[in-house]
Length: 134
Image (cartoon, helix red, strand yellow):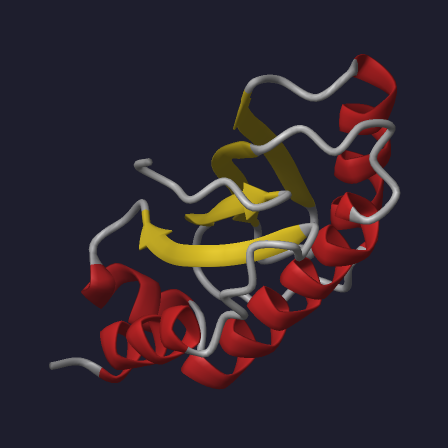
């Protein structure tokens, strides 16, 4: 098993699992082949970036205008020049203001160092007690 896949599994297992929490990271999905990700970003860099993103999402989730149970994904892309983009695929959708605040906060997180191409991945998340797939 590659180090990157092992890291993703460990990160998913260390996520808080309390129903009354405003935010929970459920899993991580690599949207590119593992060998490609390993060529473009170190495990340590990606791990630190994922931690920054989940901490930022957790802070923002606590400030949502409602406490509706939601699930979905935070999708992100990072380029070698440090530019990054975040998309939300959350159901039911966040309000426009909450969505804008969440994306702004996530895109403000310092990116990981990427080499030779863009990386793309997603963090599957739950807000306010909803479990992904329930």
